[in-house]
Length: 139
Image (cartoon, rainbow, N blue to C red; front, top):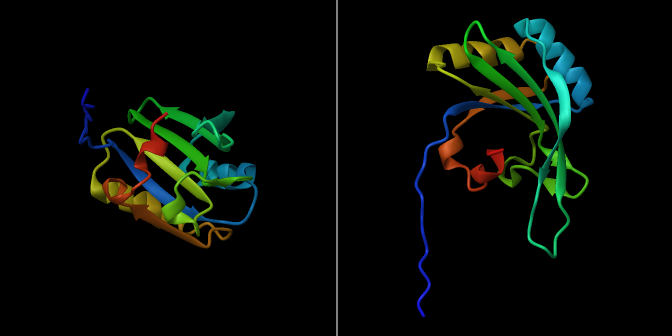
């Protein structure tokens, strides 16, 4: 019997900011909180389940819901003890997902502000649609 393979072409509806910073997750979350006047709070780690012969990967996760703007923020570590959340971005330590109705100018302004944090080495917008491992960002 022939196998049927379903390919879904979808567009993820969030802004993704790549952040390079070698400090602990709580430090970067605190700095982003002060800068953006939000309250990212630690949640249970995001567990990425892999094939049965590979160990699951665990990534720290912070969350804040901005009800005024109807935006939702997630700060995820990109590195775990046994791999990367987004292997294409190995030089990146954290990923900031912002869900909601942001326009490009608002997203660029957030990146510009994040770059002003002294402990941040690099920050830039990522085109999620071009990431091979973008499915890892769905939770």
